[in-house]
Length: 162
Picture: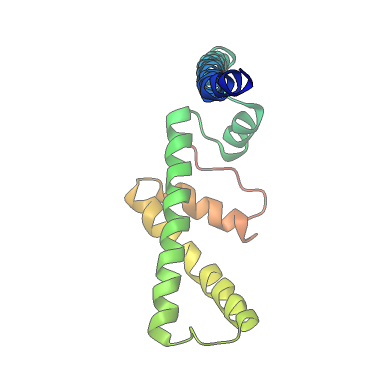
């Protein structure tokens, strides 16, 4: 009798264990899925609300203060100026890398290499900024900006054109 009950208990134990494991796995999967869906929906709603806030309340304070300081009237022109700054920064890095490779200065000690790169980028940046700015149709503004940046003209107003 003991042998028969023991065999029955051992034969049912893996089935019960497998059933519990499958049930727990299904419950965890459903809970995780529901949590991920709820988090995704909350993120979408928060993004939508923040986008609506941006649209309804206008641009942030720093954007408005830069527009006023730089004498820019429209948001589209301001975005164009920022795009030129982004293109100029990327182009300066790429040109600087090629100039250093062409000059064969890549094998310097790390500290000297970083100092050389900084000096080279500082020297190249205004020329690339003027070139890209002129191609974008904002050459006069970038001449004014660089003169103010390098303190050639301290309190000169920005160029007055839209």
